[in-house]
Image (tube, rainbow, N blue to C red; front, side, top):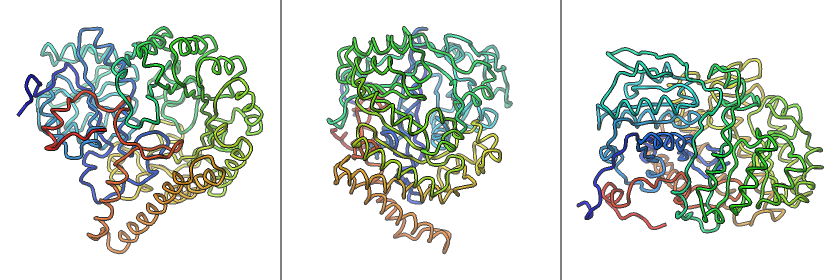
Length: 578
């Protein structure tokens, strides 16, 4: 029975639905959601339950036109409530339009399957896809039965607003809305790719006020929000689908980096109110910000009292900005040289400073008040073989010895699951030493359900095969974790738990591969072991910075839309307290 005065369904003008990477991940005992198959670089699982931050811009723009958008994070709900009846939940969501993301292809299995499930429940639903990956694969994506419309472009605020306004009135003639591929009368039609604004790109104020009262499930960490002050990129990293090269080719524009109105970014910070003092910020793409805008941002951070900010930086931050960072809050800088080797770093699109220059700069950053520098290295770059990866790990030990760990914390992760379609390396693989295994959307979709994660990779290099990439990732990260225990950077019990998980994962992957080679299938006892392992790995989130098992809930992207009474009804159990 529905609780008194509680709605039995939800209504909106647009539902944005974030799917898990693999739609039926809860039932799978034929594939492994292996530790590190999501790189463990951010606080998510390999279900990739973080939805695109651009959805907030869509929600806000539609609200300005009197339209109600609700975001439902199915991936997060399915992780937190394993018995949730997703099909029944879809039947409770009523809107003229439903939107999905592919999110750098990580959701390409789950989103397409979820769209098909929605069509089974509501055959008249208008299902739309958008984003960078959807734009790249628009011609293929529109041919899936569950997809009605693909909205091309990175800034889709105007086309989506027109589409939802029309659908709400009962209209289905989409011919006057730009940037669409859509189905009508059994054929695919195109309205051209003409909406490419040169300014005010994605210019909407993200409203974080919903997050003020939420509490993280892990009391040891503060709340975390994200800011994104610009669209596109001025830089040209060869592996990145949002690079200058990729953006120019996919979006058909000459100007590849457009800044958001800075007053909107400041308003976003203000929307947290007093909760700012218990909130951290991950400042995305602030490496493309000029001094004036960056300092205005830092003034707002200081005024509002944010707990801390993690700043992505492409170059070594200049002295005045370092000083401003140190005065504004507890500031941390994220550097990504990709490799200690300047040849590899430059080939990857970085190489703007040497490791010697970085080591000279770190004390100046710390003296200016910056609390720490995180140095990220990547596995899967040109010219990078196993010896080079392990040399990077040796260099990490040098950094740990010199800076005592947290002042300059080294981290390393593999490029998984995919090399970005549209990136220079994906489009010109032979020139850069890559081989591409999955070209089409369907090939990527099928790859996500490969049993062994190295087979999910859509690339290998001349220097590291897909299997080598998997093996050296475990070898490198295990050695780095052991170093952090040896030097007291992290508690020994944290590190031992990670090392035990890595050992268990490698053993299980080897048993799976042996079974496939011998019989082409998994025996029942191995499938049972895989099921237990998957449930363990997908029972928490983690990251390499502080590798502790965190319970789900309280993250900015966890679902807050579906009420608890509805979850209880559709799960057949009591909602767990977090």
